Length: 182
Image (cartoon, rainbow, N blue to C red; front, side, top):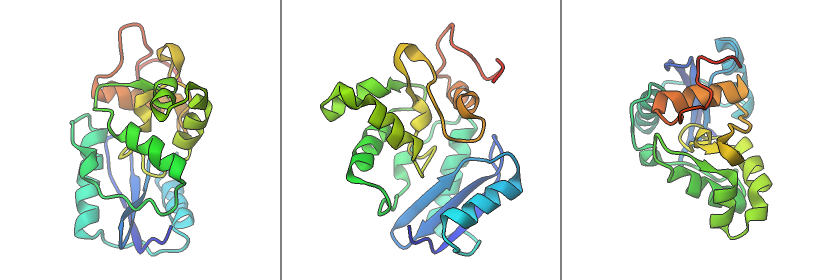
């Protein structure tokens, strides 16, 4: 990733980070345990790019992420992503995942089947675990078999995933909610 700059911004779930390049948004970071940890992570993943005021394109992406995390449906597909740092397989997984509308979920197996091989479910999960664009690539909308939350690489793990799904109204009766323990 060749970031030109990055910024932190407030959301309903805490301060997030966003980095941009000349080709689009190259990273979105969900909150770490504390704002300084989020800032440290952004500095690390952008390889020394400077914290800076967001460009117009980055400001649009910030507004979309803020709305998404507040449970306000927005078309995150409007955010132009710079995917130069991801593999072809990841791009394919992210393209399918990006089409999942707010309030809906799919499973790792369903995405694997769409890729042409249900046995790729674990690889789908690994690709989503490396997702540098959450929630613009809404990996939180992908569940394990049986509608179990599965993993989530953001701070708070599956609990954060469930909070995000609850904000979108995606939890079905009987699933854990954001008010259940971690």
